[in-house]
Length: 162
Image (cartoon, rainbow, N blue to C red):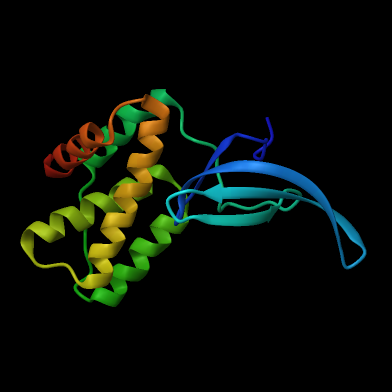
């Protein structure tokens, strides 16, 4: 299966769950390329992506068998936070942009734990909320569980310690 098939879901690290609406051929600067149109409903955003170029910004959804491993990883993760907010922001954004669901879960746990100790900056609070939304959207699609149930599971995993 190609990374881009019509009607298939894809995950973007910043925009969350999207659906490939169509794939079409276009000529750009004399070269014919295949473009996938992806719609992200939460952001009400349509994006055209060159199917022929390798990109790590999109990935297929995780398999249901990975869900327990994600929660276990979140429980076991012991975060270390730089004291400077801009350093934390950069580290967390790099983890999110990696498009690795396990690193996304680390960002969620780190920021959740930090929020219990001190008030998060506006950017950090926004990052935590968006990261949770991205993970919950994907887990809802993969497991069929309700978002509230998954949000509670995430909160429990964040409170777990080794």
